[in-house]
Image (cartoon, rainbow, N blue to C red; front, side, top):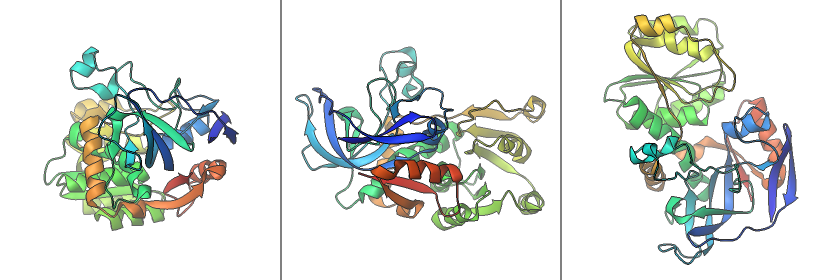
Length: 340
């Protein structure tokens, strides 16, 4: 089968790779679409902490079941599915505490023998394979993974309460989906900031967020005028160092800052502001089974017009173009999918 292999930072090649064996607990999936994530971009740039060339990237996918192992029940060929790309050990203290998402021994695609999703077929254990609705478009089903990231951040780490004032710093796919999850959780005010007007327009369209272009003159003056009491919760959904200062400035005393973005370089943090304002600084990484199940349910139910987030669909053969497009962050490019 064909797969897009990151052979060195900045260069992806299409290689023919052999099909792996389907284990007794596995499901073989004919991949229809794979999403290009910001973490794939970090790997493309040579800055990902653990995905290193040569590697098949990708961990967001949707497709149809082709084959399954002898221990698998509940699936049949042709089922439309997506995959939660995380396998925790299930036995360590963190797993027993219900924190499987930060299990030290967890396995993820693109590390070790678990191949990434930028390939014509993918293998996943049935326990992390989720059925999509019969009418759910596969190009929408692939969004379950990034949506689950936003759901985990909003419902578990931020604990958004009805009426909360929320600011999302960075309106890429994760930021927009986080804003949507915050709206669903009952936030009273949802604000999104970004440098790209197209992304901000999507945030307004998809969940009614108030938006501010953080590259425009006077945007913080306007934000202070509109939200003089600042925000209960700030979501860092960008990896731009300047957003750390912005989060500290715009979170009210006693508020909470949730770090979802992957900061691949050290950043300066003014701890005096954290202590004097009694701010909570909370990390958020991926999701657990319940978060992912909720994401699939939302997508199957069409809770939001998720398909609008997908701006580009390119064939697998153009994986290099897809990563370059994401790296350039040109106007009009938000969620990019690869079609197998």
